[in-house]
Length: 185
Image 1 (spheres, rainbow, N blue to C red):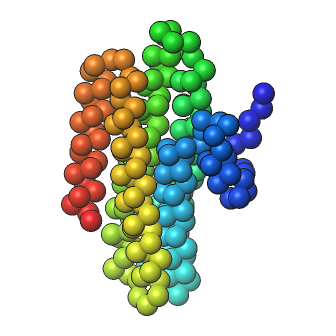
Image 2 (image 1 turned 90 degrees about the horizontal axis):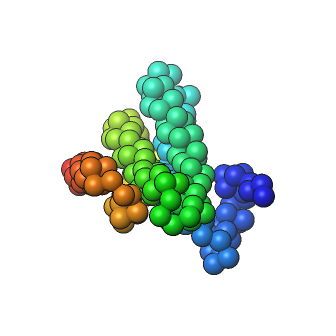
């Protein structure tokens, strides 16, 4: 059965899919990725407006915001696919163990990328004046929230990853990313 990509759905249909108990995805990871993408989009908007007024001032942050937005949009579907694979794999199988790694890795990547959006906020913020500060502030708050949510999901899903060494490595990275968020808030 062909499933349309989540990012191809209308906003209304995406929200309805999240609210539906008839399907397990999209859920928290996909929503966090979409929230992070929207946050990066706000930074792209602000950077582009400022670029029009003062060329070169935010050219690199604009490109970075666009790249992060694309990556997070891809992660909306990657997270859902990872969870679907886990649910569809037979219990106790190698496929299930491999899928267990994916359901921890996908939200971790979402969290990692959202932390990059938070870093970008700090580079854009000093250049912003007036009401655009509100968009940058919204971008910061949304990216921080999405990162925290994704890291919570990744940590919970560690129980589905079988390898103790992998669990320890991922847990360490989750802790480091949380510490990074605390210092940036």
